[in-house]
Image (cartoon, rainbow, N blue to C red; front, top):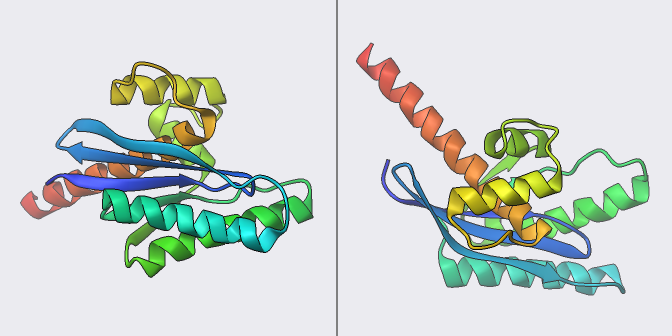
Length: 169
């Protein structure tokens, strides 16, 4: 597998985490991570800021693929709907820039990075720090986005190994 650069996105209606990770073989390298903070106020302008923030990261860091966390099941239907809008803005930015997009549940992401789907945020932050050789834990939303990118990279690497074994056998 040649080098692959992936943008992970942890969508949120107030804070959207973004993280770019590059894989070259088994080596993972942190390229960029940030929190797109859109705060309170009317939903439309907040969604536009999410779209622009994701589009800017794509323009600046050139990921080939995008991994997007799926919306979890919320107890509050209104909150789930707003979160879905935020996720849709991030998805639109990725699709508009003609990137391949993969979708992962929080359970899949945590399992890929920590080893258990029930990992706490602090565990995800710690494992992201260790896997990427960072000096300190990234902010929670950025860590979740980086974890999403790492999950996608691991999933692609596993699929490539399975495919190569099927071709040999």
